[in-house]
Length: 541
Image (cartoon, rainbow, N blue to C red; front, side, top):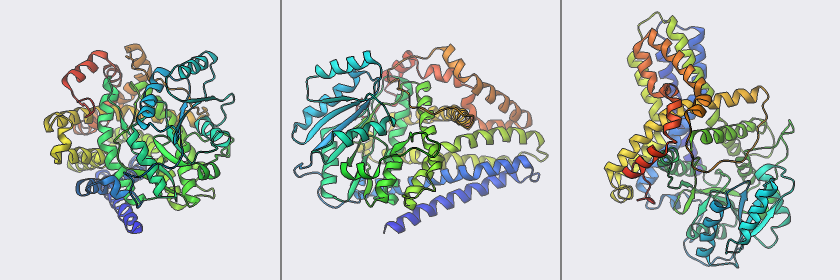
């Protein structure tokens, strides 16, 4: 059965990719082939593979959400009652911290401990990698006065970043525990969601890890508010679709997940890469190794009671993307190593494609501006419009179908304040993402170039606090994006106004990157969105 599902996924992927490549070739062929046109097509082929992944996950996910009574349960490769039954396993709740605001970290944990009301089976551990002595003293004082039971441990030597932090705990402090619930500093889970994950592990002794779907929490600032409105719709479809064909060979996202301690400790110890550097994006590697050792890895594709905070502004968002990019691209060193199944290697390839497509998009935009200057034939307007439309639909299909799925059911759209309010939020979010993606692709390309030129990848502490962004900071960060956009759009418009207009939705964000950064971090704009309840999540309403 799972083999049939995987054939469906890869069939959709290949058909989508082939169709898009054919459209691109049809748009390029008028006037004959040139070196520049050949480069555009070559850049588009791997990008088309990622678009195929988007469609391959979105279509099954949407159909399951529409027709299944409980989509998450239907896609869970586990038999047994996961909603009732006694909790028998002892579970350590692990929270990794590094220079965090304890006033934000501890309250969600306190709520979880109070709701669980089960100190015999659940124990909270704070695993600190903080190196600043003053911050460490503040952590210890906050833990001492938090009002609930929590064990605090701070490492002196922070080897291996987060993965090393967790493994050190597994080696020296895990005695007596069977399961570990992994949380980040900004994670929050309900007692019901935690108990469900534990019950899944109890009824499925061959399951090594269960990853819960994660929603973004309601946010005060415009940037995370708009971002997570679309993310919630798209990730639900994506996760259900991915679970449809991945089954017990699923992903791990590093937090809001539960794993079985003994096999994780035995099989997920990460050695250094061939160049001696540390594996940064550890989660997908750990999932692939668990599955290769015969343990199941699956997703509970429901975000109820499982949430996280998103970056407060565009600079923090792009900084996080840069860290993830550096980590995911390290997977190229692992693809030929033994110890992975075919699905595990595919997971690593997918993770690389997510970021590797960014420089391809930028290269195609620049090459298109160059090609337009030498085009001898009339601009193939209708073919390019068809390509642009197909590209847009394929890339954003998980999100578009997520919006459609919500609008189809009265109870679901009522949670967002009705169809009109939901559609207004979706419209704002789609425009927001088009503008953001254009600038983000250039930022990812710059980050990748820095790595190629020898920059060292690291895992610096994150700013999670709301803040505004001044014009000076935005100009310093995005003047290059604006210059690139201005030059390329001028070249396109000089050759064909139609070419510039068709490119505008996809790359127009470069022209407004500076004001976009400022406006989406503006307290007044954020307050206006909250007042009008635009892109409001159900928890807010």
